[in-house]
Length: 201
Image: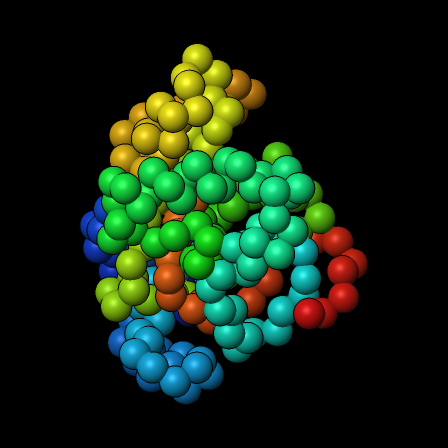
């Protein structure tokens, strides 16, 4: 991870699989004022990939990926996969966030850059803050999203939700990319890795 700036510096707590960086309390009140009403404590640092330009202070609400999948329906390339992953979550991990209703981000800039290189090279990477105390979140191995070589789709989904199988990309054996699913809104702090020229959204 890049050296922490004065804005991102803070202690860490162990929640789930990886330690999540926690913001200073002095900043939390200022964050909450910029976001929709409700319990929100922007206490945790993350990195979010998106193709649109967003100004610092923008509030990103959860559920956009799910809205896309549901709007397009079975003709979407990933519809069947997402339905299967949601069915497993509902049956075995009902307290974890639904992929249909959450925000997606990474806990480190290295994982966000890996995702950008391999899936969305035109994306921007934003430093964001979210609430890991008052909203459900899950950390899942991105490589366990089906298809996973040597595993059935059912096994891959199980490992994704259990986050119990370390999988290294063939060409980058030093990294195990993890994504965070959170029901929390996100506060944009800044663009730390500019992408393509997509207009502000």
